[in-house]
Length: 401
Picture 1 (cartoon, rainbow, N blue to C red):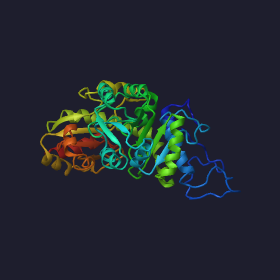
Picture 2: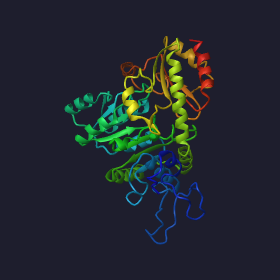
Picture 3: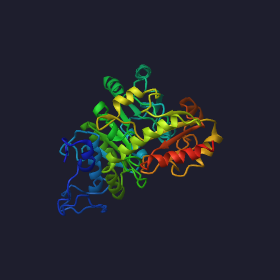
Picture 4: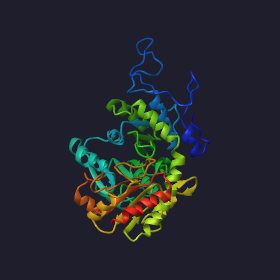
Protein backbone atom coordinates (compact mmCIF):
# COMPACT_ATOMS: atom_id res chain seq x y z
CA UNK A 1 0.00 0.00 0.00
CA UNK A 2 2.15 2.86 -1.29
CA UNK A 3 -0.12 5.86 -0.57
CA UNK A 4 1.88 8.03 -2.99
CA UNK A 5 -0.79 10.74 -2.96
CA UNK A 6 -0.70 11.31 0.81
CA UNK A 7 1.19 14.05 2.59
CA UNK A 8 4.23 12.92 4.57
CA UNK A 9 2.42 13.41 7.88
CA UNK A 10 -0.24 10.91 6.80
CA UNK A 11 2.37 8.52 5.41
CA UNK A 12 3.87 8.29 8.91
CA UNK A 13 0.61 6.65 9.98
CA UNK A 14 -0.40 4.74 6.85
CA UNK A 15 2.60 4.46 4.53
CA UNK A 16 3.31 0.90 3.44
CA UNK A 17 0.77 -0.52 5.89
CA UNK A 18 -2.02 -3.08 5.47
CA UNK A 19 -4.79 -4.01 7.90
CA UNK A 20 -4.47 -7.59 9.09
CA UNK A 21 -6.23 -9.71 6.42
CA UNK A 22 -7.71 -12.08 9.02
CA UNK A 23 -8.77 -9.82 11.91
CA UNK A 24 -8.65 -6.33 10.37
CA UNK A 25 -6.24 -5.18 13.10
CA UNK A 26 -4.85 -1.72 12.29
CA UNK A 27 -1.49 -2.55 13.93
CA UNK A 28 0.41 -5.69 12.92
CA UNK A 29 0.67 -8.45 15.46
CA UNK A 30 4.06 -9.22 16.96
CA UNK A 31 5.02 -12.31 14.97
CA UNK A 32 7.20 -14.31 17.36
CA UNK A 33 7.38 -17.62 15.53
CA UNK A 34 10.92 -18.53 14.52
CA UNK A 35 9.79 -20.91 11.76
CA UNK A 36 6.79 -21.54 9.51
CA UNK A 37 5.11 -24.74 8.36
CA UNK A 38 5.44 -25.86 4.74
CA UNK A 39 2.77 -27.80 2.87
CA UNK A 40 5.46 -29.61 0.87
CA UNK A 41 9.24 -29.08 0.70
CA UNK A 42 9.67 -25.55 -0.66
CA UNK A 43 5.91 -24.89 -0.78
CA UNK A 44 4.91 -22.27 1.80
CA UNK A 45 3.03 -19.00 2.28
CA UNK A 46 6.06 -16.79 1.66
CA UNK A 47 7.54 -17.31 5.12
CA UNK A 48 10.20 -19.91 5.94
CA UNK A 49 12.38 -18.70 8.81
CA UNK A 50 12.11 -15.52 10.86
CA UNK A 51 15.64 -14.27 10.15
CA UNK A 52 14.64 -14.22 6.49
CA UNK A 53 10.96 -13.34 6.77
CA UNK A 54 9.07 -11.73 9.62
CA UNK A 55 5.71 -9.98 9.15
CA UNK A 56 6.27 -7.44 11.93
CA UNK A 57 9.70 -6.48 10.62
CA UNK A 58 8.32 -6.31 7.09
CA UNK A 59 5.66 -3.83 8.23
CA UNK A 60 8.27 -1.50 9.72
CA UNK A 61 10.55 -1.89 6.71
CA UNK A 62 7.76 -0.92 4.30
CA UNK A 63 6.91 2.06 6.50
CA UNK A 64 10.41 3.56 6.51
CA UNK A 65 10.84 2.80 2.80
CA UNK A 66 7.67 4.76 2.14
CA UNK A 67 8.79 7.72 4.25
CA UNK A 68 12.16 7.84 2.49
CA UNK A 69 10.42 7.73 -0.92
CA UNK A 70 12.11 4.56 -2.17
CA UNK A 71 9.63 4.39 -5.04
CA UNK A 72 9.92 0.59 -5.16
CA UNK A 73 6.66 -1.35 -5.04
CA UNK A 74 6.06 -4.59 -3.14
CA UNK A 75 5.90 -6.34 -6.50
CA UNK A 76 9.41 -5.10 -7.28
CA UNK A 77 10.84 -5.72 -3.80
CA UNK A 78 9.04 -7.33 -0.90
CA UNK A 79 9.60 -4.51 1.59
CA UNK A 80 9.90 -1.74 -1.01
CA UNK A 81 13.65 -1.40 -0.50
CA UNK A 82 13.55 -1.06 3.30
CA UNK A 83 15.69 -3.24 5.59
CA UNK A 84 15.70 -3.24 9.40
CA UNK A 85 18.57 -4.32 11.65
CA UNK A 86 19.35 -4.94 15.30
CA UNK A 87 21.19 -1.60 15.64
CA UNK A 88 22.40 1.32 13.59
CA UNK A 89 25.88 -0.17 13.51
CA UNK A 90 24.45 -3.51 12.32
CA UNK A 91 22.88 -1.59 9.44
CA UNK A 92 26.17 0.16 8.63
CA UNK A 93 28.10 -3.11 8.86
CA UNK A 94 25.73 -4.77 6.40
CA UNK A 95 25.93 -1.81 4.03
CA UNK A 96 29.73 -2.05 4.03
CA UNK A 97 29.42 -5.61 2.73
CA UNK A 98 28.51 -4.07 -0.63
CA UNK A 99 32.25 -3.30 -0.83
CA UNK A 100 35.12 -5.63 -1.64
CA UNK A 101 38.31 -6.16 0.33
CA UNK A 102 40.65 -3.22 -0.08
CA UNK A 103 38.03 -0.79 -1.41
CA UNK A 104 38.34 2.90 -0.61
CA UNK A 105 35.49 4.70 1.15
CA UNK A 106 35.26 8.49 1.33
CA UNK A 107 33.56 9.48 4.57
CA UNK A 108 32.43 12.80 5.96
CA UNK A 109 35.12 13.86 8.41
CA UNK A 110 32.72 14.49 11.29
CA UNK A 111 30.62 11.37 11.85
CA UNK A 112 29.21 9.49 14.81
CA UNK A 113 32.03 8.03 16.89
CA UNK A 114 30.76 4.48 16.41
CA UNK A 115 30.80 4.92 12.64
CA UNK A 116 34.39 6.20 12.74
CA UNK A 117 35.37 3.29 15.00
CA UNK A 118 33.80 0.74 12.66
CA UNK A 119 35.49 2.20 9.58
CA UNK A 120 38.96 2.77 11.04
CA UNK A 121 39.37 0.32 13.91
CA UNK A 122 37.42 -2.70 12.63
CA UNK A 123 36.96 -2.82 8.86
CA UNK A 124 40.32 -1.28 8.05
CA UNK A 125 41.91 -4.22 9.88
CA UNK A 126 39.50 -7.02 9.00
CA UNK A 127 38.59 -6.14 5.41
CA UNK A 128 41.34 -3.81 4.25
CA UNK A 129 38.84 -0.94 4.01
CA UNK A 130 40.61 2.30 3.19
CA UNK A 131 38.58 5.13 4.76
CA UNK A 132 39.42 8.66 3.65
CA UNK A 133 37.91 11.43 5.79
CA UNK A 134 36.93 14.58 3.92
CA UNK A 135 34.98 17.71 4.83
CA UNK A 136 32.13 17.08 2.40
CA UNK A 137 30.55 20.46 3.12
CA UNK A 138 32.94 21.53 0.34
CA UNK A 139 32.13 19.45 -2.78
CA UNK A 140 35.46 20.53 -4.32
CA UNK A 141 37.28 18.55 -1.63
CA UNK A 142 35.29 15.47 -2.64
CA UNK A 143 36.31 16.00 -6.26
CA UNK A 144 39.92 16.39 -5.14
CA UNK A 145 39.79 13.14 -3.17
CA UNK A 146 38.59 11.34 -6.30
CA UNK A 147 41.73 12.37 -8.17
CA UNK A 148 43.90 10.34 -5.79
CA UNK A 149 41.96 7.07 -5.82
CA UNK A 150 38.43 6.29 -6.91
CA UNK A 151 36.36 5.15 -3.94
CA UNK A 152 33.62 2.54 -4.18
CA UNK A 153 31.38 4.39 -1.75
CA UNK A 154 30.88 7.84 -0.24
CA UNK A 155 29.43 8.06 3.26
CA UNK A 156 27.68 11.28 4.23
CA UNK A 157 26.19 12.28 7.57
CA UNK A 158 24.16 15.49 7.69
CA UNK A 159 23.71 17.25 10.00
CA UNK A 160 26.87 15.72 11.41
CA UNK A 161 27.42 14.38 14.89
CA UNK A 162 28.34 16.37 16.94
CA UNK A 163 29.43 19.57 15.14
CA UNK A 164 26.23 19.79 13.05
CA UNK A 165 27.87 20.47 9.69
CA UNK A 166 25.38 20.41 6.82
CA UNK A 167 26.30 18.75 3.51
CA UNK A 168 24.73 19.75 0.19
CA UNK A 169 23.27 16.35 -0.66
CA UNK A 170 22.34 17.12 -4.26
CA UNK A 171 25.88 18.32 -5.01
CA UNK A 172 27.54 15.22 -3.53
CA UNK A 173 25.04 12.88 -5.22
CA UNK A 174 25.74 14.46 -8.60
CA UNK A 175 29.49 13.94 -8.23
CA UNK A 176 29.01 10.36 -6.99
CA UNK A 177 26.78 9.44 -9.93
CA UNK A 178 29.21 10.96 -12.40
CA UNK A 179 31.97 8.71 -11.07
CA UNK A 180 29.85 5.58 -10.51
CA UNK A 181 30.20 5.65 -6.72
CA UNK A 182 27.58 4.24 -4.34
CA UNK A 183 26.31 7.14 -2.23
CA UNK A 184 25.02 6.59 1.31
CA UNK A 185 23.57 9.15 3.71
CA UNK A 186 23.11 8.75 7.45
CA UNK A 187 19.83 10.64 7.87
CA UNK A 188 19.43 10.00 11.60
CA UNK A 189 19.49 13.62 12.81
CA UNK A 190 17.13 15.02 10.17
CA UNK A 191 14.79 12.04 9.73
CA UNK A 192 12.71 11.69 6.55
CA UNK A 193 10.44 14.41 7.90
CA UNK A 194 13.10 17.05 7.21
CA UNK A 195 15.11 15.62 4.31
CA UNK A 196 14.91 12.62 2.02
CA UNK A 197 18.32 11.91 0.46
CA UNK A 198 16.96 9.46 -2.12
CA UNK A 199 14.95 12.30 -3.61
CA UNK A 200 18.21 14.27 -3.90
CA UNK A 201 20.01 11.55 -5.81
CA UNK A 202 21.47 9.30 -3.12
CA UNK A 203 21.47 5.52 -3.50
CA UNK A 204 21.02 4.42 0.12
CA UNK A 205 19.77 6.04 3.32
CA UNK A 206 20.77 4.79 6.75
CA UNK A 207 19.06 5.44 10.10
CA UNK A 208 19.80 4.68 13.69
CA UNK A 209 16.22 3.74 14.50
CA UNK A 210 17.15 4.04 18.17
CA UNK A 211 16.94 7.81 17.83
CA UNK A 212 14.07 9.86 16.32
CA UNK A 213 12.30 7.04 14.47
CA UNK A 214 11.76 5.04 17.65
CA UNK A 215 11.55 8.29 19.56
CA UNK A 216 10.99 6.98 23.09
CA UNK A 217 14.42 5.68 24.19
CA UNK A 218 13.04 2.16 24.46
CA UNK A 219 14.26 0.42 21.31
CA UNK A 220 17.62 -0.17 19.61
CA UNK A 221 17.61 -0.61 15.86
CA UNK A 222 18.92 0.42 12.47
CA UNK A 223 17.58 0.71 8.93
CA UNK A 224 18.70 0.96 5.33
CA UNK A 225 16.53 2.15 2.44
CA UNK A 226 17.37 2.13 -1.26
CA UNK A 227 15.51 3.15 -4.40
CA UNK A 228 17.68 0.96 -6.64
CA UNK A 229 16.32 -2.52 -7.35
CA UNK A 230 19.84 -3.87 -7.94
CA UNK A 231 21.05 -2.68 -4.54
CA UNK A 232 17.85 -3.88 -2.88
CA UNK A 233 18.52 -7.37 -4.21
CA UNK A 234 22.05 -7.30 -2.80
CA UNK A 235 20.93 -5.91 0.56
CA UNK A 236 18.18 -8.54 0.80
CA UNK A 237 20.82 -11.26 0.38
CA UNK A 238 23.25 -9.60 2.82
CA UNK A 239 20.62 -8.97 5.49
CA UNK A 240 19.75 -12.67 5.50
CA UNK A 241 23.31 -13.94 5.07
CA UNK A 242 24.79 -11.82 7.86
CA UNK A 243 21.75 -12.06 10.08
CA UNK A 244 21.88 -8.85 12.11
CA UNK A 245 18.13 -8.41 11.76
CA UNK A 246 15.72 -6.43 13.92
CA UNK A 247 13.62 -8.61 16.20
CA UNK A 248 9.80 -8.55 16.07
CA UNK A 249 9.31 -6.77 19.41
CA UNK A 250 11.73 -4.00 18.40
CA UNK A 251 10.08 -3.75 14.96
CA UNK A 252 6.70 -3.29 16.65
CA UNK A 253 8.04 -0.50 18.89
CA UNK A 254 9.83 1.17 15.97
CA UNK A 255 6.67 1.15 13.87
CA UNK A 256 4.69 2.60 16.74
CA UNK A 257 7.29 5.34 17.06
CA UNK A 258 7.15 6.21 13.35
CA UNK A 259 3.42 6.82 13.55
CA UNK A 260 3.99 9.89 15.76
CA UNK A 261 7.19 11.06 14.02
CA UNK A 262 5.56 14.02 12.26
CA UNK A 263 4.10 15.62 15.38
CA UNK A 264 7.23 14.93 17.43
CA UNK A 265 9.55 16.44 14.83
CA UNK A 266 7.43 19.58 14.64
CA UNK A 267 7.89 20.05 18.40
CA UNK A 268 11.60 19.17 18.30
CA UNK A 269 12.17 21.76 15.56
CA UNK A 270 10.16 24.53 17.22
CA UNK A 271 11.83 24.05 20.60
CA UNK A 272 15.27 23.54 19.06
CA UNK A 273 15.13 26.88 17.29
CA UNK A 274 13.78 28.72 20.33
CA UNK A 275 16.38 27.30 22.71
CA UNK A 276 19.26 27.80 20.24
CA UNK A 277 18.33 31.49 19.91
CA UNK A 278 18.19 31.82 23.70
CA UNK A 279 21.55 30.09 24.18
CA UNK A 280 23.18 32.31 21.55
CA UNK A 281 22.52 35.31 23.79
CA UNK A 282 23.70 33.69 27.03
CA UNK A 283 26.94 35.15 28.48
CA UNK A 284 28.17 31.74 29.71
CA UNK A 285 27.97 30.26 26.19
CA UNK A 286 30.88 30.98 23.87
CA UNK A 287 29.22 29.72 20.68
CA UNK A 288 26.07 27.94 19.53
CA UNK A 289 25.93 25.66 16.49
CA UNK A 290 22.45 25.07 15.10
CA UNK A 291 21.58 24.88 11.38
CA UNK A 292 18.66 27.25 11.86
CA UNK A 293 20.81 30.12 13.08
CA UNK A 294 22.11 32.66 10.57
CA UNK A 295 25.52 32.23 12.22
CA UNK A 296 25.74 28.60 11.07
CA UNK A 297 28.33 28.15 8.31
CA UNK A 298 25.94 26.17 6.09
CA UNK A 299 22.71 27.93 7.08
CA UNK A 300 21.80 28.65 3.45
CA UNK A 301 22.18 24.98 2.48
CA UNK A 302 20.21 23.85 5.52
CA UNK A 303 17.41 26.33 4.78
CA UNK A 304 17.13 24.96 1.24
CA UNK A 305 17.54 21.28 2.09
CA UNK A 306 15.80 20.78 5.44
CA UNK A 307 12.05 21.34 5.24
CA UNK A 308 9.03 20.42 7.34
CA UNK A 309 5.64 20.81 5.66
CA UNK A 310 7.24 23.04 3.03
CA UNK A 311 8.95 25.41 5.46
CA UNK A 312 12.59 25.43 6.65
CA UNK A 313 13.05 23.34 9.82
CA UNK A 314 16.28 22.35 11.47
CA UNK A 315 15.76 19.56 13.99
CA UNK A 316 16.24 19.22 17.71
CA UNK A 317 20.02 18.88 17.97
CA UNK A 318 22.08 21.79 19.32
CA UNK A 319 25.82 21.97 19.96
CA UNK A 320 27.22 24.60 22.32
CA UNK A 321 30.66 25.64 23.48
CA UNK A 322 30.73 26.56 27.17
CA UNK A 323 32.99 29.43 28.20
CA UNK A 324 35.91 27.68 29.86
CA UNK A 325 37.13 24.11 29.58
CA UNK A 326 36.49 20.64 30.95
CA UNK A 327 35.93 21.80 34.53
CA UNK A 328 33.25 24.27 33.50
CA UNK A 329 31.59 21.73 31.23
CA UNK A 330 31.52 19.17 34.05
CA UNK A 331 29.90 21.63 36.46
CA UNK A 332 27.28 22.51 33.87
CA UNK A 333 26.50 18.88 33.05
CA UNK A 334 26.39 17.84 36.70
CA UNK A 335 23.73 20.44 37.43
CA UNK A 336 21.14 19.80 34.72
CA UNK A 337 18.04 17.92 35.81
CA UNK A 338 15.37 17.93 33.11
CA UNK A 339 18.07 17.41 30.48
CA UNK A 340 19.21 13.86 31.30
CA UNK A 341 22.99 13.39 31.17
CA UNK A 342 23.04 10.35 28.92
CA UNK A 343 24.20 9.11 25.54
CA UNK A 344 21.83 8.80 22.57
CA UNK A 345 19.37 11.38 21.26
CA UNK A 346 16.03 11.86 19.54
CA UNK A 347 13.75 10.78 22.35
CA UNK A 348 10.73 12.57 23.75
CA UNK A 349 12.84 13.46 26.76
CA UNK A 350 15.69 15.96 26.48
CA UNK A 351 19.20 14.55 26.69
CA UNK A 352 22.61 16.18 27.04
CA UNK A 353 26.13 14.79 26.76
CA UNK A 354 29.86 15.51 26.46
CA UNK A 355 31.05 14.01 23.15
CA UNK A 356 34.79 14.08 23.89
CA UNK A 357 34.26 11.86 26.94
CA UNK A 358 31.11 9.99 25.95
CA UNK A 359 29.89 9.34 22.37
CA UNK A 360 33.12 10.26 20.56
CA UNK A 361 35.71 9.00 23.03
CA UNK A 362 36.77 6.31 20.52
CA UNK A 363 37.73 8.99 17.96
CA UNK A 364 41.49 9.67 18.27
CA UNK A 365 42.28 12.81 20.26
CA UNK A 366 44.09 14.42 17.31
CA UNK A 367 41.06 13.82 15.09
CA UNK A 368 38.71 15.29 17.71
CA UNK A 369 40.95 18.35 17.93
CA UNK A 370 40.96 18.80 14.15
CA UNK A 371 37.16 18.54 14.06
CA UNK A 372 36.70 20.99 16.91
CA UNK A 373 35.34 18.42 19.38
CA UNK A 374 36.86 20.19 22.35
CA UNK A 375 36.46 19.79 26.09
CA UNK A 376 34.00 22.69 26.21
CA UNK A 377 31.72 21.22 23.53
CA UNK A 378 28.35 19.97 24.78
CA UNK A 379 25.62 18.35 22.66
CA UNK A 380 21.93 18.81 23.43
CA UNK A 381 19.02 16.75 22.17
CA UNK A 382 15.91 18.86 22.73
CA UNK A 383 12.87 16.79 23.63
CA UNK A 384 9.18 17.64 23.59
CA UNK A 385 8.88 19.13 27.09
CA UNK A 386 7.74 22.73 27.53
CA UNK A 387 10.35 25.14 26.16
CA UNK A 388 10.40 27.33 29.26
CA UNK A 389 10.98 24.40 31.59
CA UNK A 390 13.98 23.38 29.48
CA UNK A 391 15.35 26.93 29.42
CA UNK A 392 14.94 27.21 33.20
CA UNK A 393 16.90 23.97 33.60
CA UNK A 394 19.73 25.22 31.40
CA UNK A 395 19.76 28.61 33.13
CA UNK A 396 20.19 27.06 36.57
CA UNK A 397 22.96 24.75 35.33
CA UNK A 398 24.81 27.56 33.54
CA UNK A 399 24.87 29.51 36.79
CA UNK A 400 27.42 26.93 38.01
CA UNK A 401 29.84 27.64 35.13
